[in-house]
Image (cartoon, helix red, strand yellow):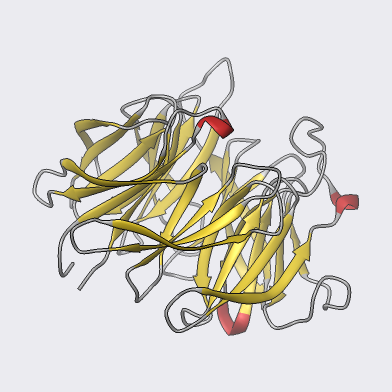
Length: 350
């Protein structure tokens, strides 16, 4: 990584029953992984944070409020944070963001309303109008009445050839649609891939060999899929997200793929662990080991160099783990105090 080594965290603020205050930037020591706080920016529950692929601009999904918002934030080489713009997410509880379209489109998954918003971005990375707003199908909800009462878009990510994929926890579906189809009423029907009833899909991640992986939050499973056509997948099978049984249940959250695609790390809320899997081309991932997350309710993880940063939301810390370059094994190094952390992103500058 060129330039300074920076890390930025998001959190839950009191509006979402957390006790954080917004974004925090840190200087990251690439040798021992330790963090030094640099700057802070107050925002209403910026629970998910990403960086533009080529610009020093961050985007935050601000969950608080009946209708959520999305902020664009400038980050300086000294870690300084400055909000550039804030726009409506056009739905409730935005929880995930992704940039596609060669850096000119931002996808927003609104968990509360089950909608997916695509925003156009201008050449400076600022929001420049709505490209599309898509609503999930309320007739397709899953069997878990407590969590699947309606569509709940948990992720929207770009795919090949202008496609976007929506992961809908409420309907047990993966939905593929073209970004340039017109709006909800007149747009082409999405391509639908059904997951097992009650799976509660939370996240879709593509491996380097073409295999895709889906995290089932409600059934605590990790699914492997093959892509059968544009926007469509076939489920190959699944493995348990955790080998540690818990009486209160386990709710896997975030899947991180190593740079070479050989390893998967999956955070488990309830078991409070990080599970390590080996990828198997065209097959199911193989469970290797499981490590304490270093706190409680590990919501998100970020691989940066030889370190894995785990956001332990209820443990109020960022746990810093060393990653063995050969085996992928984790060793806990530090616990950086952080209030209700929900996400961390290593920032690229220079």
